[in-house]
Length: 378
Image (cartoon, rainbow, N blue to C red; front, side, top):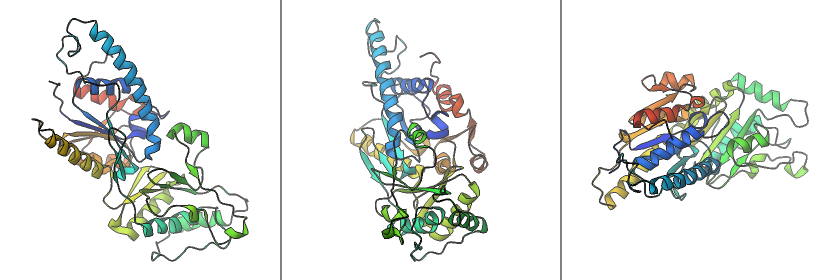
């Protein structure tokens, strides 16, 4: 039998949580996850606002590490008289195949879910009219990538624009630079592509952080045929799971958040995934809703397999996060843990949640080792 654990599922955010400031999973954390899979019947879930493609790097790093450690472990077990089914006489459970991490991937804040084999099993999209309104009313006023005659089409929404937002937009439109830097960089996430209006950091830095190159949508503002168009004419309206606005001015994103909530109500879910990033997903979609869908799937598989153990429940999950897009997840599960480096707004919203070490201190791994009593020695 496997060792009993107080939680059967571990769900963790990525940036600012399980990843360090170099956007990497440390060896200490990878070893913790390896021990988790090797000796405990615990399921692990990455729950992130990232695009699915940008989780590939972390998954590959884990796969490489698991293969190396599994080979080392099996060699050591075979040389021990207790045999392969035991952990050097401790009676701990040894997974049948720990060479690959068994990970569910929740991406785009719950708009996409991939199973442990990498198969897309859940997909939720924003309504096309909302996608269009987000582009025209919240993206277009802040981008330089439009023709001189481009106007916002009437789609039935007239969001309130604060003085600070209007001033920022006017400052951009009236700028003397030929190609002024965009105040807001708008992204659209479909299943297979990450569309982007403007770079929000140098491209090499984006590739290092996310492990993928977004599609910077081309637009020639000097082309006469583009006089009445904008970069958003080449953005998708259907199949969009998330629209994201990145801005270095938090006050603009705060105003956007309030305005979007006011205009679209429960047709959208809105959350800050960082102080510089505002995410918009379909209504009632979040990391919490994704965990509910995964629990339902695991319960179905448990019933079909006629296991003696009861099906997993949300109370069987421990979750970790640092941003407002983690709020619903952290307050829905059995135990929510907030990183020391988390946004103060999240700490205030969930004052009953335990604050653990920072992502730079391997906070997630340290807490898991404490709870599951995993040895500090590899």
